[in-house]
Length: 86
Image (tube, rainbow, N blue to C red):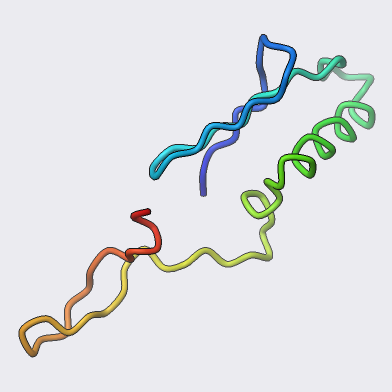
């Protein structure tokens, strides 16, 4: 699973993705403290939803396996899953 960076010093959400890294940054008007969890949570959830990032934190979605079986030279071998290499 890709890490989420949920803090930023800029004012607009930025999503950067390539084949190996993914980061999500945004600025919430409300910084999390002991008294404002519900407001902060609603802002974070809206940002995640608006950027279509739910699949990265949804525990009900099963990620593909890191290795798959492939026959090479008449022998079954475990190789890195090409789905994860892209």
